[in-house]
Image 1: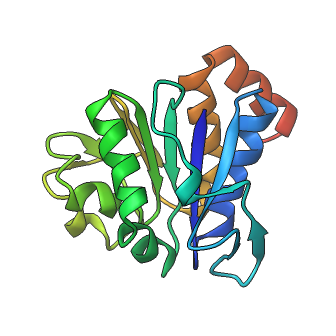
Image 2: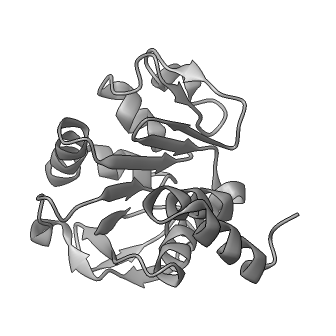
Length: 181
């Protein structure tokens, strides 16, 4: 199970491209509304979440959480105790944590990126406390996956498929999406 958290002001591409790609790969994904079931993104697109944050289950069925960026979406994610509990659960139980754009700052503020390669939207590097700043669009270090921003949302989603399924599955999807080389 993968939870993709949607807080008011989230970046639509950074949330929905990975959801789409993961579902194409056959991964069970739930979008999680933070604050309400209908959440409006930073570009005023309302999205109806599958569940709300008070319905998440933190147990062995959880493989990954995804934190989209956007403003004020990232701030709204970080101010929610249930979202932070999910981050803590994943960190404590060796589960994947994926964050894109400004959202890696949440992990940095918690000290989870200390000594790890990470990337974020330019200007947020100061918030990645102790991280080794990568030059890649998508950086993977152990169970932590970070990405620069909306422009690499598909690449981010494909990396999540590679980690949860296989490289072959990710490459097949990339070819079918016509975004490869």
